[in-house]
Length: 269
Image (tube, rainbow, N blue to C red):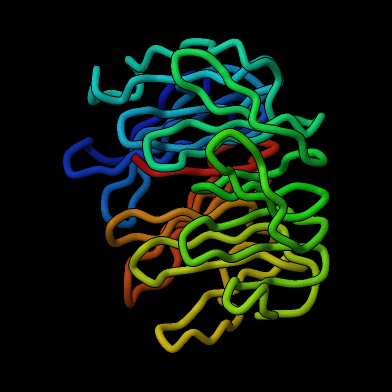
């Protein structure tokens, strides 16, 4: 298997976006120009479980701790300085506005503001987005200083804006209560503020159209997609074995092997 101990470059670094990928090897920074993968290399070595980008901060959930890097100090992923926050081992991180949230295998959910404040307990935490937490016992909402259960069960992923939830029994959207979108087991769901949304269930990638209809979206690789994220124009996807995919509007997916294992999440700066 190829390694990424040394950064490999396929294009120049002008006009690029950086996609951070959480993997067994650590947090990998991937530079992408249009739909071409440029340089990629390990920005922080750890067993990364999740990664999230805030207004000024990159946060990583790992088996050791939650690590944060200040994105305002450098334009280069190589120069990011990651600092431990003393949360302890974590399974999920996310931002509610500028506020960093994290959760762990024991169901602890905390808010970080120079130090951690416990907000409450759920079952094992799997994902955090905006004020919503996906856990084995359903979806929870972060209140002022607590957690409030808001329904469903065995939830694997959640979108905080125009809420969506991926669960063992289906994909749901929040309307007058949680409403069915697609049946079946779903592992991930992602959306942005411009109407784009994707979900992964049963090894298949689904996309939401402008009319709100969800349909399968074929990808040119056999392995299942583990994470989807968005740039201003491009859509990015990464498979669990580390194939990186990028698609511009009106174009086909292009892909590049990164030589990773255990990919779980991705986020764009």
